[in-house]
Image 1 (cartoon, rainbow, N blue to C red):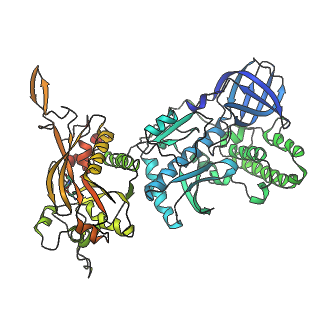
Image 2 (cartoon, rainbow, N blue to C red):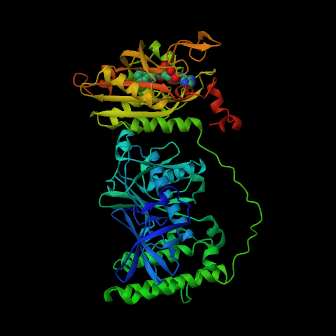
Image 3 (cartoon, rainbow, N blue to C red):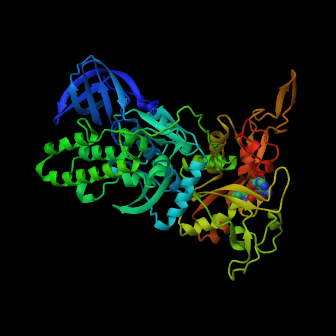
Length: 608
Ligand code: FA5
Protein backbone atom coordinates (compact mmCIF):
# COMPACT_ATOMS: atom_id res chain seq x y z
CA UNK A 1 0.00 0.00 0.00
CA UNK A 2 1.44 3.39 -0.90
CA UNK A 3 1.52 6.39 1.43
CA UNK A 4 -1.06 9.11 0.78
CA UNK A 5 0.86 12.38 0.34
CA UNK A 6 -1.24 15.00 2.16
CA UNK A 7 1.27 17.79 1.49
CA UNK A 8 0.52 17.64 -2.22
CA UNK A 9 -2.99 18.99 -1.56
CA UNK A 10 -2.11 21.35 1.29
CA UNK A 11 1.46 22.55 1.84
CA UNK A 12 0.39 24.42 4.95
CA UNK A 13 -0.85 21.39 6.93
CA UNK A 14 1.25 21.17 10.08
CA UNK A 15 -0.46 18.35 11.97
CA UNK A 16 -2.24 15.11 10.99
CA UNK A 17 -3.18 11.68 12.25
CA UNK A 18 -2.03 8.48 10.53
CA UNK A 19 -1.81 4.72 10.95
CA UNK A 20 1.50 2.87 11.26
CA UNK A 21 1.85 0.26 8.48
CA UNK A 22 5.42 -0.89 9.03
CA UNK A 23 8.34 -0.35 11.42
CA UNK A 24 11.94 -1.35 10.83
CA UNK A 25 15.60 -0.61 11.53
CA UNK A 26 17.99 0.90 8.99
CA UNK A 27 21.54 2.19 9.59
CA UNK A 28 21.04 2.34 13.37
CA UNK A 29 17.83 4.28 12.93
CA UNK A 30 14.18 3.39 13.13
CA UNK A 31 12.02 3.87 10.08
CA UNK A 32 8.25 4.00 9.96
CA UNK A 33 5.84 3.71 7.07
CA UNK A 34 2.39 5.29 7.45
CA UNK A 35 -0.86 5.15 5.49
CA UNK A 36 -0.66 8.94 4.97
CA UNK A 37 1.81 11.69 5.74
CA UNK A 38 2.42 15.43 5.87
CA UNK A 39 6.22 14.90 5.92
CA UNK A 40 7.93 15.91 2.69
CA UNK A 41 10.35 13.28 1.40
CA UNK A 42 13.59 14.76 0.10
CA UNK A 43 13.45 15.20 -3.68
CA UNK A 44 13.07 17.70 -6.50
CA UNK A 45 15.78 19.79 -4.85
CA UNK A 46 13.74 20.29 -1.67
CA UNK A 47 15.13 18.90 1.62
CA UNK A 48 13.15 16.48 3.78
CA UNK A 49 10.94 17.65 6.63
CA UNK A 50 11.76 17.09 10.27
CA UNK A 51 9.34 16.69 13.15
CA UNK A 52 7.77 14.10 15.42
CA UNK A 53 5.53 11.06 15.10
CA UNK A 54 3.88 10.35 18.42
CA UNK A 55 1.98 7.18 19.35
CA UNK A 56 0.39 5.95 22.59
CA UNK A 57 3.68 4.54 23.88
CA UNK A 58 6.48 6.29 22.07
CA UNK A 59 7.77 8.98 19.75
CA UNK A 60 9.95 9.05 16.63
CA UNK A 61 12.08 12.21 16.22
CA UNK A 62 12.04 12.36 12.42
CA UNK A 63 15.40 13.54 11.05
CA UNK A 64 15.09 12.31 7.46
CA UNK A 65 12.28 11.32 5.11
CA UNK A 66 12.79 9.47 1.85
CA UNK A 67 10.66 8.13 -0.98
CA UNK A 68 10.84 4.42 -1.45
CA UNK A 69 8.75 2.89 -4.24
CA UNK A 70 5.47 4.64 -3.42
CA UNK A 71 6.03 4.50 0.32
CA UNK A 72 7.50 7.19 2.50
CA UNK A 73 10.13 6.17 5.04
CA UNK A 74 10.23 8.40 8.11
CA UNK A 75 13.63 7.85 9.73
CA UNK A 76 14.97 8.95 13.06
CA UNK A 77 15.44 8.17 16.73
CA UNK A 78 12.73 6.27 18.54
CA UNK A 79 12.07 6.77 22.21
CA UNK A 80 9.61 4.32 23.78
CA UNK A 81 7.72 2.00 21.45
CA UNK A 82 5.57 2.29 18.36
CA UNK A 83 3.61 -0.61 16.90
CA UNK A 84 2.09 -1.53 13.55
CA UNK A 85 -1.59 -0.50 13.68
CA UNK A 86 -0.95 2.41 16.12
CA UNK A 87 -2.76 5.65 15.43
CA UNK A 88 -0.08 8.33 15.58
CA UNK A 89 0.02 12.13 15.65
CA UNK A 90 2.25 13.75 13.04
CA UNK A 91 3.79 17.19 13.65
CA UNK A 92 6.24 18.74 11.22
CA UNK A 93 8.89 21.29 12.17
CA UNK A 94 6.93 24.17 10.65
CA UNK A 95 9.60 26.94 10.64
CA UNK A 96 11.90 24.54 8.78
CA UNK A 97 9.20 23.50 6.29
CA UNK A 98 8.12 27.11 5.76
CA UNK A 99 11.71 28.06 4.93
CA UNK A 100 11.91 25.13 2.51
CA UNK A 101 8.69 26.34 0.87
CA UNK A 102 10.18 29.81 0.43
CA UNK A 103 13.32 28.39 -1.13
CA UNK A 104 11.35 26.08 -3.40
CA UNK A 105 8.84 28.67 -4.65
CA UNK A 106 11.73 31.13 -5.09
CA UNK A 107 13.37 28.55 -7.40
CA UNK A 108 10.27 28.52 -9.61
CA UNK A 109 9.97 32.31 -9.59
CA UNK A 110 13.65 32.56 -10.55
CA UNK A 111 13.13 30.03 -13.35
CA UNK A 112 10.39 32.26 -14.77
CA UNK A 113 12.38 35.47 -14.24
CA UNK A 114 15.31 34.05 -16.23
CA UNK A 115 12.92 32.91 -18.99
CA UNK A 116 11.51 36.44 -19.15
CA UNK A 117 15.01 37.85 -19.64
CA UNK A 118 16.34 35.16 -21.98
CA UNK A 119 13.58 33.92 -24.27
CA UNK A 120 13.82 30.24 -25.15
CA UNK A 121 16.11 29.28 -22.27
CA UNK A 122 15.28 25.93 -20.69
CA UNK A 123 15.48 25.21 -16.94
CA UNK A 124 17.18 21.84 -16.49
CA UNK A 125 17.49 21.30 -12.78
CA UNK A 126 17.25 23.00 -9.42
CA UNK A 127 18.29 22.73 -5.81
CA UNK A 128 16.34 24.54 -3.15
CA UNK A 129 18.18 24.12 0.11
CA UNK A 130 19.64 20.60 0.06
CA UNK A 131 23.13 20.93 1.55
CA UNK A 132 22.55 24.67 1.74
CA UNK A 133 22.68 25.08 -2.04
CA UNK A 134 20.07 27.18 -3.84
CA UNK A 135 20.24 27.37 -7.62
CA UNK A 136 18.37 26.80 -10.88
CA UNK A 137 20.34 25.35 -13.78
CA UNK A 138 19.79 26.39 -17.41
CA UNK A 139 20.85 25.15 -20.83
CA UNK A 140 21.95 28.47 -22.33
CA UNK A 141 24.71 30.90 -21.48
CA UNK A 142 23.80 33.39 -18.75
CA UNK A 143 26.31 36.07 -17.87
CA UNK A 144 26.82 38.07 -14.69
CA UNK A 145 25.82 41.28 -16.44
CA UNK A 146 22.34 39.79 -16.92
CA UNK A 147 21.86 39.50 -13.16
CA UNK A 148 20.39 43.04 -12.76
CA UNK A 149 17.76 42.29 -15.45
CA UNK A 150 16.96 38.94 -13.79
CA UNK A 151 16.67 40.73 -10.44
CA UNK A 152 14.28 43.25 -11.97
CA UNK A 153 12.04 40.43 -13.22
CA UNK A 154 12.22 38.70 -9.82
CA UNK A 155 11.08 41.90 -8.13
CA UNK A 156 8.33 42.41 -10.71
CA UNK A 157 6.92 38.90 -10.26
CA UNK A 158 6.84 39.39 -6.50
CA UNK A 159 5.22 42.81 -6.69
CA UNK A 160 2.64 41.42 -9.12
CA UNK A 161 1.40 39.08 -6.34
CA UNK A 162 0.69 36.24 -8.75
CA UNK A 163 -1.36 33.31 -7.47
CA UNK A 164 0.46 29.96 -7.28
CA UNK A 165 -1.80 27.00 -7.98
CA UNK A 166 -1.17 23.29 -8.20
CA UNK A 167 -3.09 20.52 -9.93
CA UNK A 168 -2.72 16.73 -10.03
CA UNK A 169 -2.39 15.37 -13.58
CA UNK A 170 -1.71 12.16 -15.44
CA UNK A 171 1.20 11.80 -17.87
CA UNK A 172 -1.32 11.81 -20.76
CA UNK A 173 -2.86 15.06 -19.52
CA UNK A 174 0.62 16.61 -19.38
CA UNK A 175 1.12 15.65 -23.02
CA UNK A 176 -2.34 16.88 -24.01
CA UNK A 177 -1.75 20.25 -22.35
CA UNK A 178 1.68 20.38 -23.97
CA UNK A 179 3.43 21.05 -20.68
CA UNK A 180 7.11 21.29 -21.50
CA UNK A 181 9.14 18.65 -19.69
CA UNK A 182 12.67 19.92 -19.37
CA UNK A 183 13.89 16.91 -17.41
CA UNK A 184 13.01 13.25 -16.93
CA UNK A 185 9.97 12.94 -14.73
CA UNK A 186 9.99 10.38 -11.95
CA UNK A 187 7.75 7.50 -13.02
CA UNK A 188 7.06 6.27 -9.50
CA UNK A 189 5.47 9.44 -8.05
CA UNK A 190 2.07 11.10 -8.54
CA UNK A 191 2.35 13.90 -11.11
CA UNK A 192 1.41 17.45 -10.27
CA UNK A 193 1.82 20.75 -12.06
CA UNK A 194 2.38 24.14 -10.49
CA UNK A 195 1.41 27.36 -12.20
CA UNK A 196 2.51 30.86 -11.26
CA UNK A 197 0.01 33.43 -12.53
CA UNK A 198 -0.43 32.90 -16.25
CA UNK A 199 3.07 31.56 -16.80
CA UNK A 200 3.73 28.19 -18.32
CA UNK A 201 2.87 25.33 -15.93
CA UNK A 202 5.78 23.23 -14.66
CA UNK A 203 5.79 19.68 -13.35
CA UNK A 204 6.45 19.85 -9.60
CA UNK A 205 5.92 17.64 -6.55
CA UNK A 206 7.25 19.96 -3.83
CA UNK A 207 5.54 22.27 -1.38
CA UNK A 208 4.71 25.74 -2.61
CA UNK A 209 3.54 29.07 -1.21
CA UNK A 210 0.12 30.37 -2.27
CA UNK A 211 1.15 33.63 -3.93
CA UNK A 212 4.35 35.33 -4.97
CA UNK A 213 3.38 38.17 -2.62
CA UNK A 214 4.10 35.80 0.27
CA UNK A 215 7.68 35.15 -0.94
CA UNK A 216 10.51 36.51 1.13
CA UNK A 217 12.63 38.80 -1.04
CA UNK A 218 14.60 36.73 -3.55
CA UNK A 219 18.08 37.77 -4.70
CA UNK A 220 19.88 36.27 -7.70
CA UNK A 221 23.46 36.32 -6.44
CA UNK A 222 25.82 34.64 -8.86
CA UNK A 223 26.21 32.68 -12.09
CA UNK A 224 28.21 29.47 -11.89
CA UNK A 225 29.10 27.30 -14.89
CA UNK A 226 28.89 23.57 -14.18
CA UNK A 227 29.42 20.84 -16.77
CA UNK A 228 28.54 23.19 -19.60
CA UNK A 229 25.31 24.35 -17.90
CA UNK A 230 24.64 27.70 -16.25
CA UNK A 231 23.49 27.88 -12.66
CA UNK A 232 21.87 30.99 -11.26
CA UNK A 233 22.47 30.96 -7.51
CA UNK A 234 19.92 32.68 -5.32
CA UNK A 235 19.01 33.36 -1.75
CA UNK A 236 15.87 34.36 0.10
CA UNK A 237 15.80 36.77 3.02
CA UNK A 238 13.30 36.41 5.82
CA UNK A 239 12.27 40.03 6.49
CA UNK A 240 11.36 39.22 10.11
CA UNK A 241 14.77 37.73 10.82
CA UNK A 242 16.58 40.53 9.00
CA UNK A 243 14.72 43.13 11.02
CA UNK A 244 16.00 41.47 14.17
CA UNK A 245 19.57 40.59 13.22
CA UNK A 246 20.20 42.51 10.03
CA UNK A 247 21.85 39.48 8.45
CA UNK A 248 19.64 36.43 8.15
CA UNK A 249 19.49 35.04 4.62
CA UNK A 250 19.11 31.53 3.30
CA UNK A 251 22.70 31.79 2.16
CA UNK A 252 24.23 32.83 5.46
CA UNK A 253 22.14 30.37 7.39
CA UNK A 254 21.98 27.36 5.12
CA UNK A 255 25.21 27.39 3.18
CA UNK A 256 27.95 25.19 4.59
CA UNK A 257 30.87 27.44 5.45
CA UNK A 258 33.44 25.49 3.49
CA UNK A 259 33.19 22.77 0.88
CA UNK A 260 35.91 20.65 2.50
CA UNK A 261 33.91 20.45 5.68
CA UNK A 262 30.93 18.70 4.14
CA UNK A 263 32.31 16.91 1.11
CA UNK A 264 32.88 13.57 2.83
CA UNK A 265 29.94 13.66 5.23
CA UNK A 266 26.74 11.63 4.85
CA UNK A 267 23.80 13.66 3.53
CA UNK A 268 21.71 12.95 6.61
CA UNK A 269 24.33 14.44 8.91
CA UNK A 270 24.75 17.64 6.88
CA UNK A 271 20.97 17.87 6.44
CA UNK A 272 20.54 17.73 10.24
CA UNK A 273 23.15 20.49 10.66
CA UNK A 274 21.46 22.62 8.02
CA UNK A 275 18.09 22.09 9.68
CA UNK A 276 19.50 23.52 12.92
CA UNK A 277 20.92 26.47 11.02
CA UNK A 278 17.48 27.15 9.57
CA UNK A 279 15.96 27.38 13.05
CA UNK A 280 18.42 30.21 13.76
CA UNK A 281 16.77 32.28 11.07
CA UNK A 282 13.64 33.12 13.01
CA UNK A 283 14.21 34.95 16.31
CA UNK A 284 11.13 33.49 18.01
CA UNK A 285 12.16 29.98 17.03
CA UNK A 286 15.83 30.40 17.95
CA UNK A 287 14.88 31.97 21.28
CA UNK A 288 12.62 29.09 22.30
CA UNK A 289 14.48 26.09 20.85
CA UNK A 290 16.33 23.67 23.10
CA UNK A 291 19.78 23.30 21.50
CA UNK A 292 22.12 22.11 24.25
CA UNK A 293 19.78 20.40 26.73
CA UNK A 294 19.43 16.64 27.11
CA UNK A 295 17.02 16.36 24.20
CA UNK A 296 18.41 19.46 22.52
CA UNK A 297 18.78 19.67 18.75
CA UNK A 298 22.54 20.21 18.88
CA UNK A 299 23.04 17.46 21.48
CA UNK A 300 21.12 15.11 19.20
CA UNK A 301 23.20 15.75 16.14
CA UNK A 302 26.41 15.64 18.19
CA UNK A 303 25.47 12.12 19.27
CA UNK A 304 25.61 11.02 15.62
CA UNK A 305 29.36 11.81 15.57
CA UNK A 306 30.40 8.46 17.01
CA UNK A 307 28.29 6.60 14.41
CA UNK A 308 30.08 8.23 11.49
CA UNK A 309 32.92 6.45 9.66
CA UNK A 310 36.29 7.32 11.29
CA UNK A 311 37.53 9.22 8.21
CA UNK A 312 34.54 11.61 8.38
CA UNK A 313 34.74 12.39 12.10
CA UNK A 314 37.37 15.10 11.85
CA UNK A 315 35.41 17.26 9.39
CA UNK A 316 32.16 16.46 11.21
CA UNK A 317 33.73 17.70 14.44
CA UNK A 318 34.83 20.93 12.78
CA UNK A 319 31.35 21.45 11.39
CA UNK A 320 29.80 20.88 14.82
CA UNK A 321 32.20 23.37 16.45
CA UNK A 322 31.26 25.93 13.88
CA UNK A 323 27.54 25.23 14.39
CA UNK A 324 27.93 25.55 18.16
CA UNK A 325 29.48 28.98 17.75
CA UNK A 326 26.73 30.06 15.39
CA UNK A 327 24.03 28.93 17.82
CA UNK A 328 25.71 30.71 20.75
CA UNK A 329 26.20 33.93 18.82
CA UNK A 330 22.69 33.93 17.37
CA UNK A 331 20.97 33.10 20.64
CA UNK A 332 23.02 35.79 22.41
CA UNK A 333 22.01 38.33 19.76
CA UNK A 334 18.33 37.38 20.10
CA UNK A 335 18.43 37.32 23.90
CA UNK A 336 18.37 34.39 26.32
CA UNK A 337 16.85 31.30 24.84
CA UNK A 338 14.61 31.06 27.86
CA UNK A 339 12.97 34.38 26.98
CA UNK A 340 10.14 34.41 24.49
CA UNK A 341 9.64 37.44 22.27
CA UNK A 342 7.06 39.91 23.54
CA UNK A 343 4.32 39.98 20.95
CA UNK A 344 0.81 41.30 21.51
CA UNK A 345 -1.12 38.55 19.75
CA UNK A 346 -4.42 40.35 20.29
CA UNK A 347 -3.50 43.21 17.94
CA UNK A 348 -5.29 43.00 14.58
CA UNK A 349 -2.93 42.40 11.64
CA UNK A 350 -2.28 44.92 8.92
CA UNK A 351 -3.36 43.54 5.57
CA UNK A 352 -0.93 44.75 2.93
CA UNK A 353 -2.47 45.93 -0.31
CA UNK A 354 -1.24 43.66 -3.06
CA UNK A 355 -1.27 44.33 -6.77
CA UNK A 356 -1.27 42.14 -9.85
CA UNK A 357 0.07 42.14 -13.39
CA UNK A 358 -1.39 44.72 -15.76
CA UNK A 359 -4.00 43.09 -18.04
CA UNK A 360 -1.82 43.74 -21.10
CA UNK A 361 1.14 42.01 -19.38
CA UNK A 362 -1.19 39.11 -18.50
CA UNK A 363 -2.22 38.88 -22.16
CA UNK A 364 1.42 38.99 -23.30
CA UNK A 365 2.32 36.18 -20.89
CA UNK A 366 -0.56 34.05 -22.16
CA UNK A 367 0.20 34.71 -25.84
CA UNK A 368 3.87 33.87 -25.24
CA UNK A 369 2.96 30.54 -23.64
CA UNK A 370 0.55 29.60 -26.40
CA UNK A 371 3.19 30.05 -29.07
CA UNK A 372 6.08 28.63 -27.04
CA UNK A 373 4.08 25.44 -26.59
CA UNK A 374 4.27 24.81 -30.35
CA UNK A 375 7.94 25.64 -30.73
CA UNK A 376 8.02 29.41 -31.32
CA UNK A 377 10.83 31.40 -29.65
CA UNK A 378 9.97 34.71 -28.02
CA UNK A 379 12.34 37.49 -29.08
CA UNK A 380 12.59 41.24 -28.55
CA UNK A 381 14.13 43.80 -30.85
CA UNK A 382 14.84 47.54 -30.46
CA UNK A 383 11.85 49.82 -29.90
CA UNK A 384 13.63 52.59 -31.79
CA UNK A 385 15.00 51.04 -34.96
CA UNK A 386 16.34 52.01 -38.35
CA UNK A 387 14.09 52.77 -41.31
CA UNK A 388 15.68 49.77 -43.06
CA UNK A 389 14.14 47.27 -40.60
CA UNK A 390 10.79 49.07 -40.20
CA UNK A 391 10.17 49.74 -43.91
CA UNK A 392 12.84 49.36 -46.54
CA UNK A 393 13.77 45.70 -45.92
CA UNK A 394 10.02 44.99 -45.86
CA UNK A 395 9.68 45.93 -49.49
CA UNK A 396 8.61 49.53 -48.75
CA UNK A 397 11.26 51.73 -50.40
CA UNK A 398 11.60 55.42 -49.48
CA UNK A 399 8.61 57.58 -50.48
CA UNK A 400 6.44 54.50 -51.09
CA UNK A 401 2.81 55.53 -50.38
CA UNK A 402 2.18 52.34 -48.33
CA UNK A 403 4.32 53.84 -45.56
CA UNK A 404 1.63 56.46 -44.86
CA UNK A 405 -0.56 53.93 -43.09
CA UNK A 406 2.06 53.48 -40.39
CA UNK A 407 1.85 57.16 -39.31
CA UNK A 408 5.36 56.99 -37.95
CA UNK A 409 7.17 58.91 -35.20
CA UNK A 410 10.72 59.82 -36.29
CA UNK A 411 13.51 60.17 -33.72
CA UNK A 412 15.67 63.30 -33.91
CA UNK A 413 18.95 61.37 -34.11
CA UNK A 414 21.85 61.07 -36.51
CA UNK A 415 20.66 58.79 -39.39
CA UNK A 416 22.66 55.67 -40.21
CA UNK A 417 24.57 55.95 -43.49
CA UNK A 418 23.33 52.50 -44.57
CA UNK A 419 20.06 51.98 -42.67
CA UNK A 420 18.46 55.43 -42.81
CA UNK A 421 16.54 57.36 -40.16
CA UNK A 422 15.73 56.20 -36.65
CA UNK A 423 12.00 55.61 -36.04
CA UNK A 424 9.86 54.43 -33.13
CA UNK A 425 8.91 51.01 -34.49
CA UNK A 426 5.36 51.32 -35.89
CA UNK A 427 4.90 47.52 -36.06
CA UNK A 428 6.61 44.34 -34.91
CA UNK A 429 7.28 43.39 -38.54
CA UNK A 430 10.52 45.36 -38.00
CA UNK A 431 11.72 42.18 -36.23
CA UNK A 432 11.38 39.97 -39.33
CA UNK A 433 14.70 40.75 -41.02
CA UNK A 434 16.42 41.15 -37.64
CA UNK A 435 15.39 37.58 -36.77
CA UNK A 436 16.70 36.31 -40.12
CA UNK A 437 20.00 38.07 -39.36
CA UNK A 438 20.10 36.68 -35.79
CA UNK A 439 19.88 33.16 -37.22
CA UNK A 440 22.54 33.91 -39.85
CA UNK A 441 19.92 33.54 -42.60
CA UNK A 442 19.62 29.85 -41.70
CA UNK A 443 15.99 28.66 -41.40
CA UNK A 444 14.06 27.09 -39.73
CA UNK A 445 12.68 30.26 -38.12
CA UNK A 446 9.80 30.21 -35.65
CA UNK A 447 9.72 33.66 -34.08
CA UNK A 448 7.17 35.32 -31.83
CA UNK A 449 8.09 38.97 -31.37
CA UNK A 450 5.93 40.85 -28.85
CA UNK A 451 6.78 44.50 -28.42
CA UNK A 452 5.61 48.06 -27.96
CA UNK A 453 4.74 49.91 -31.17
CA UNK A 454 4.11 53.60 -31.80
CA UNK A 455 1.88 55.45 -34.26
CA UNK A 456 0.36 58.92 -34.42
CA UNK A 457 -3.16 57.62 -33.75
CA UNK A 458 -5.60 58.11 -30.90
CA UNK A 459 -9.24 56.99 -30.65
CA UNK A 460 -11.33 54.28 -29.00
CA UNK A 461 -9.51 51.51 -30.89
CA UNK A 462 -6.08 53.15 -31.35
CA UNK A 463 -3.45 54.45 -28.95
CA UNK A 464 -0.13 56.15 -29.68
CA UNK A 465 1.69 53.37 -27.84
CA UNK A 466 0.30 49.85 -28.19
CA UNK A 467 1.59 46.30 -28.47
CA UNK A 468 1.74 43.89 -31.35
CA UNK A 469 2.74 40.26 -31.57
CA UNK A 470 4.36 39.08 -34.74
CA UNK A 471 4.75 35.48 -35.82
CA UNK A 472 7.28 34.54 -38.47
CA UNK A 473 7.85 31.01 -39.73
CA UNK A 474 10.34 30.28 -42.52
CA UNK A 475 11.32 26.80 -43.67
CA UNK A 476 11.23 24.56 -46.69
CA UNK A 477 7.69 23.85 -47.94
CA UNK A 478 5.76 26.31 -45.73
CA UNK A 479 2.31 27.01 -47.20
CA UNK A 480 -0.87 28.94 -46.39
CA UNK A 481 -2.18 25.74 -44.76
CA UNK A 482 0.48 26.09 -42.07
CA UNK A 483 -0.59 29.70 -41.52
CA UNK A 484 -4.27 28.75 -41.29
CA UNK A 485 -3.50 25.88 -38.90
CA UNK A 486 -1.53 28.25 -36.65
CA UNK A 487 -4.38 30.80 -36.67
CA UNK A 488 -6.94 28.14 -35.70
CA UNK A 489 -4.66 26.82 -32.97
CA UNK A 490 -4.20 30.30 -31.49
CA UNK A 491 -7.94 31.12 -31.73
CA UNK A 492 -8.90 28.01 -29.77
CA UNK A 493 -6.17 28.35 -27.17
CA UNK A 494 -6.75 32.06 -26.51
CA UNK A 495 -10.52 32.39 -26.90
CA UNK A 496 -11.60 28.84 -26.14
CA UNK A 497 -12.68 25.71 -28.01
CA UNK A 498 -14.96 26.28 -30.97
CA UNK A 499 -13.47 29.65 -31.96
CA UNK A 500 -12.73 29.80 -35.68
CA UNK A 501 -10.34 31.91 -37.73
CA UNK A 502 -10.96 33.40 -41.16
CA UNK A 503 -8.60 35.01 -43.67
CA UNK A 504 -9.69 37.61 -46.23
CA UNK A 505 -7.62 38.92 -49.17
CA UNK A 506 -5.80 42.17 -48.37
CA UNK A 507 -2.62 43.97 -49.31
CA UNK A 508 0.66 44.40 -47.44
CA UNK A 509 3.91 45.22 -49.21
CA UNK A 510 5.83 42.57 -47.25
CA UNK A 511 3.54 39.57 -47.82
CA UNK A 512 2.19 38.02 -51.00
CA UNK A 513 -0.57 36.92 -50.89
CA UNK A 514 -1.74 39.03 -47.93
CA UNK A 515 -4.76 38.63 -45.70
CA UNK A 516 -6.71 40.25 -42.96
CA UNK A 517 -7.35 37.85 -40.09
CA UNK A 518 -10.69 37.56 -38.27
CA UNK A 519 -11.76 35.43 -35.32
CA UNK A 520 -15.35 34.30 -34.82
CA UNK A 521 -17.36 36.21 -32.22
CA UNK A 522 -17.93 34.30 -28.98
CA UNK A 523 -21.23 36.07 -28.28
CA UNK A 524 -23.06 34.98 -31.46
CA UNK A 525 -20.80 32.02 -32.31
CA UNK A 526 -19.82 33.59 -35.65
CA UNK A 527 -23.40 33.93 -36.96
CA UNK A 528 -23.74 37.70 -36.43
CA UNK A 529 -27.18 37.13 -34.88
CA UNK A 530 -28.48 36.66 -31.35
CA UNK A 531 -31.91 35.97 -29.85
CA UNK A 532 -33.10 39.06 -27.99
CA UNK A 533 -36.56 39.30 -26.40
CA UNK A 534 -37.62 36.22 -28.36
CA UNK A 535 -36.59 37.82 -31.67
CA UNK A 536 -33.54 37.35 -33.89
CA UNK A 537 -31.37 40.48 -33.71
CA UNK A 538 -27.96 41.66 -34.92
CA UNK A 539 -25.09 40.84 -32.52
CA UNK A 540 -24.12 44.22 -31.05
CA UNK A 541 -20.59 43.11 -30.18
CA UNK A 542 -19.39 42.09 -33.66
CA UNK A 543 -22.24 43.15 -35.97
CA UNK A 544 -21.07 40.52 -38.52
CA UNK A 545 -20.09 37.35 -36.65
CA UNK A 546 -16.35 38.12 -36.90
CA UNK A 547 -13.73 40.40 -35.32
CA UNK A 548 -10.71 41.62 -37.24
CA UNK A 549 -7.46 41.40 -35.27
CA UNK A 550 -4.67 42.11 -37.75
CA UNK A 551 -2.81 41.06 -40.86
CA UNK A 552 -0.99 38.01 -42.18
CA UNK A 553 0.39 36.52 -45.36
CA UNK A 554 3.15 34.58 -47.07
CA UNK A 555 6.51 36.33 -46.66
CA UNK A 556 7.34 38.33 -49.79
CA UNK A 557 10.42 37.00 -51.68
CA UNK A 558 12.05 40.45 -51.43
CA UNK A 559 11.85 40.28 -47.63
CA UNK A 560 13.50 36.86 -47.60
CA UNK A 561 16.21 38.25 -49.87
CA UNK A 562 16.71 41.24 -47.56
CA UNK A 563 17.32 38.74 -44.75
CA UNK A 564 19.83 36.78 -46.90
CA UNK A 565 17.46 33.81 -47.47
CA UNK A 566 16.97 32.25 -50.90
CA UNK A 567 13.23 32.51 -51.80
CA UNK A 568 13.65 29.70 -54.33
CA UNK A 569 14.55 27.33 -51.52
CA UNK A 570 12.50 28.64 -48.60
CA UNK A 571 9.00 30.02 -48.05
CA UNK A 572 7.39 31.45 -44.94
CA UNK A 573 4.33 32.99 -43.36
CA UNK A 574 3.98 35.98 -41.05
CA UNK A 575 1.22 37.56 -39.03
CA UNK A 576 1.01 40.66 -36.85
CA UNK A 577 -1.85 41.52 -34.51
CA UNK A 578 -2.53 44.09 -31.80
CA UNK A 579 -2.25 42.69 -28.26
CA UNK A 580 -4.80 45.18 -26.88
CA UNK A 581 -7.26 44.47 -29.68
CA UNK A 582 -6.85 40.70 -29.41
CA UNK A 583 -7.19 40.82 -25.62
CA UNK A 584 -10.27 43.07 -25.44
CA UNK A 585 -12.20 40.62 -27.62
CA UNK A 586 -12.01 37.99 -24.87
CA UNK A 587 -15.30 36.82 -23.47
CA UNK A 588 -16.73 38.85 -20.61
CA UNK A 589 -14.28 41.78 -20.73
CA UNK A 590 -16.56 44.41 -22.29
CA UNK A 591 -13.79 46.94 -22.90
CA UNK A 592 -15.06 49.27 -25.61
CA UNK A 593 -12.22 51.81 -25.44
CA UNK A 594 -8.65 50.50 -25.34
CA UNK A 595 -7.39 53.83 -23.98
CA UNK A 596 -8.84 52.74 -20.62
CA UNK A 597 -6.05 50.15 -20.39
CA UNK A 598 -3.49 52.94 -20.17
CA UNK A 599 -5.54 55.34 -18.09
CA UNK A 600 -3.80 54.30 -14.85
CA UNK A 601 -7.30 54.18 -13.36
CA UNK A 602 -7.00 51.66 -10.52
CA UNK A 603 -10.75 51.08 -10.20
CA UNK A 604 -10.68 49.87 -13.81
CA UNK A 605 -7.44 47.86 -13.58
CA UNK A 606 -8.34 46.13 -10.30
CA UNK A 607 -11.09 44.24 -12.13
CA UNK A 608 -8.64 42.07 -14.09
C1 FA5 B 1 0.57 45.70 -39.45
O1 FA5 B 1 1.04 46.39 -38.58
C2 FA5 B 1 1.34 44.61 -40.14
N1 FA5 B 1 2.71 44.72 -39.76
C3 FA5 B 1 0.75 43.27 -39.77
C4 FA5 B 1 1.31 42.13 -40.58
C5 FA5 B 1 2.36 41.40 -40.07
C6 FA5 B 1 0.78 41.79 -41.80
C7 FA5 B 1 2.89 40.34 -40.79
C8 FA5 B 1 1.28 40.76 -42.53
C9 FA5 B 1 2.34 40.02 -42.03
P1 FA5 B 1 -1.79 46.82 -39.28
O2 FA5 B 1 -1.34 48.19 -39.49
O3 FA5 B 1 -3.10 46.44 -39.85
O4 FA5 B 1 -0.71 45.72 -39.81
O5 FA5 B 1 -1.82 46.53 -37.71
C10 FA5 B 1 -2.12 45.24 -37.22
C11 FA5 B 1 -2.95 45.33 -35.96
O6 FA5 B 1 -2.27 46.11 -34.98
C12 FA5 B 1 -4.28 46.04 -36.11
O7 FA5 B 1 -5.27 45.19 -36.64
C13 FA5 B 1 -4.60 46.42 -34.68
O8 FA5 B 1 -5.06 45.27 -33.98
C14 FA5 B 1 -3.21 46.76 -34.16
N2 FA5 B 1 -2.98 48.21 -34.19
C15 FA5 B 1 -2.51 48.96 -35.21
N3 FA5 B 1 -2.42 50.26 -34.87
C16 FA5 B 1 -2.84 50.35 -33.59
C17 FA5 B 1 -2.96 51.43 -32.64
N4 FA5 B 1 -2.61 52.68 -32.92
N5 FA5 B 1 -3.45 51.14 -31.41
C18 FA5 B 1 -3.79 49.87 -31.09
N6 FA5 B 1 -3.68 48.81 -31.92
C19 FA5 B 1 -3.21 49.05 -33.16
